[in-house]
Structures are given as C-alpha cells and as structure tokens.
Length: 82
Image 1 (cartoon, one colour):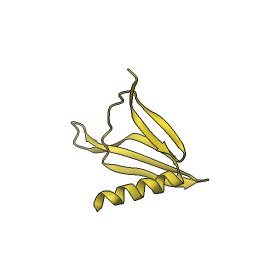
Image 2 (cartoon, helix red, strand yellow; image 1 turned 60 degrees about the vertical axis):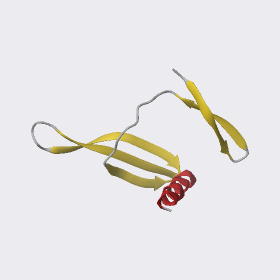
Image 3 (cartoon, helix red, strand yellow; image 1 turned 90 degrees about the horizontal axis):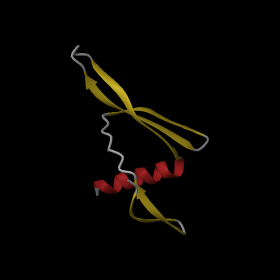
Image 4 (tube, one colour; image 1 turned 180 degrees about the horizontal axis):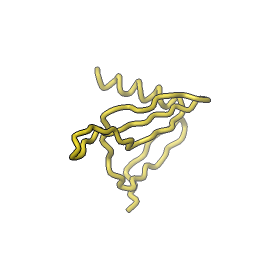
C-alpha cells in the first residue's frame, strides 16, 4: 500500500513523500565506502551466526548517493551528537 506521509523541501522544490511500507534493515558494519565521479557507494552488512558457530557478515543494503547528499548526511548525524 502506497501512503503519502508528508512533504519535504529540496531547494526550491516541495516534494511529496510516499511510503511503500518497506521494513527497516538493521546493519552492524560497513562493508564498502568509496567514491567515483561524485557518487558515494556505501555497503552495509548484518552479522549473523548459524548453528556452525561461524560468524558471517551478510550484505543487507547498498546505497549509491551523490557526494553532496553524503556530506549532508554526515552533518545531520553530527547534529544528533549536540
């Protein structure tokens, strides 16, 4: 079910936010951090352990975002500390 959940300003534009109800993903570690041609590539994994007792890192999310958005994310996370 697609729901409208609000609005957000992006520069001079106002965008309507839609939520498809995707479940949140929990991650434990970053597996990839790189940048090429202004696109930041981030990969994240969750640590799991099967009955064999060997811990495994399973990639659960990959993000490809413009570098300016990555810096905006950094600033927003830093603001959480204050």
